[in-house]
Structure formats: C-alpha cells, structure tokens
Length: 341
Image (cartoon, rainbow, N blue to C red; front, side, top):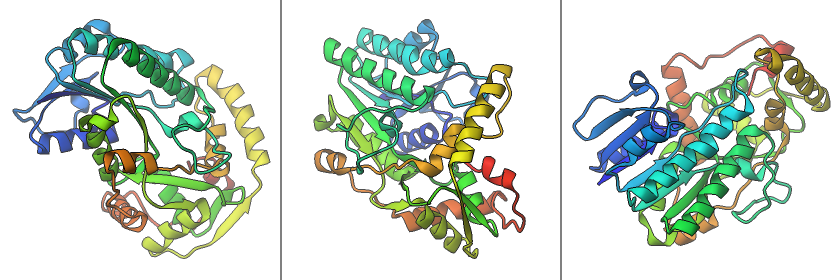
C-alpha cells in the first residue's frame, strides 16, 4: 500500500515513516527540501519536493496513494506571522482534502493537538470538552481540524483526527529544555508546580496513528492519544532528576511577574522580528493544566500504551546524554527560567 506522509521531516513524522516502512508499506513524503529527510534511500521510499501550500504540488503528491497522514505543522518562531500558521494548518489541509477526494484516497488521518482544549479547567478533558485555544498555533490547528471534519462529512472522505498529548522520546528536541531544567542544581519552577502534564511516548503515539488508519471504528472519529500515566509538573521534574542521578532542589517563583513580562516582551519584540526572551506560552507551560482521558481510543481502537513514564523518560534521557545534550549545571540565573521551556 502506498501512503503519503506530510510533516515527515518532523519528529513524529520521521518515526511514523520508519514504522510504515518496517511494516512493508511504500511511503511517499511531501517535503520542502529533500536535504531535511533523515532517512537512508530505499526502494519503498519516495521523496516529493513541494510545499503543502502549493495546490499543484499537493495534487501530484496525493496521486496514487491509498492513505494520507497529515502531520504538517507550522512551529512557533519570532519571524512567523499569523498568516503563516493559517496557510499551513488551514489552507494546506484544504489542499490535501480536495486532492484526497479527487484521487479517491481510502483513508485520511489528520494530526491535530490537545492544545485545542487550552487550559483544562475540569480535568481530565475528553474529546468532547470545550475548545479554548490560547494562541495562533492552537487556533489555526483547531480551524484546520474543524475544516477537515466538515469537509470529510460533506464529501464522504474516511477521516480520523488524532489529538496527541505532549510528545517525547529519543530524537525529540522540544522537551530537551524540560530535561535540562530538571538537572540543574536548583530547578526554577514558575507557580506552584501542581499543574498536570500529560505526555505520550513516541512509539505509543505512532501505534495510535496506525490504529487510527486501519480500524473501521476510527472513521469519522476524533481521538486523544496519550500515555497511561499523568503527573503534576513537580513530580515530573523530580522523576527526571532521579532518572539522571541528580539531586532534587526546586525553587518556586510567583507566576504573575513572568506573565506580565511575557506579554510586554511579545508586544515589543515580535513586531521587530526579534525573538522575545520570554513568551507567555513559556509561562503557560508552568501554570496551565493538561490532563486528558484516553478512554475513547482504548475502547474503540484497542490502544494500549506500552511505555510507562519512567521507562520513556529513562530512554529519552539516555539519548540526550548520548548526544552530549544533557549535563549537570551548577549555576542558576534568573534568565535560565526565561529560556527553559
């Protein structure tokens, strides 16, 4: 079976592609630059250079495939404007959906985010919990998801939406800062440290994507895919410190000054194309709860996470150490916390 993966140069897309190739599928990647593909050339892997924002490039990439995994995403950068997010998350998704119908694609799996629920006021959130996206990334991911669901229902496309929780594992760099924070001689924590943080190990998430693309029960459904275990932030930082053999020593800092500073920095820096020293979303990491119910995906698809949090953290920390990315720091400055997450 020939399968198209967008976002294949990202952490999740790369791991999903590896799994599909191991399972014997022919995989086609739509990427902006061939040089970003970190996979060895092989007969069952096709690389199509093109942009998801280019309707013609998308149509060419979709022709002849049976399934699509849409993992393309616009990551937050200081130089990005709101339209950049909308072009990829909404218009890029629209191009894929239209091409999927034209070329009679059998299954379409769309990657959204649990960020569409924002700060979870009544944890754990389910797929039916209220939407509360907090930034342009989350708002446009929600727009793209709702577009996909409405389009699929109207055109008879077999669509499944996956909302992953926080993804981690060997090879991931987005949560490296969390690990670096945990192994300091003093770990600065904005707020109480009692907010929930829900993670999913990359291999478990990939399995969730595979199930979503195969099970008949998945068609027309939305699934939150996460790990089995949940921890408050303080306990998560302690677990990382223990796994890496570092002493635990936290200092809690009031959140309000950082929230105000984040807002001010964004207003000054972003219009100038500068990277703010602190974002409100960095503060949100410490102050907003993310706890989700994965009962639906377990019940309907038989999803069963294989990697407990301790084992997943151990494997991830080992990879960071192997790469020379994780080491004990004896110094602490206030600026550390501003660039931590």
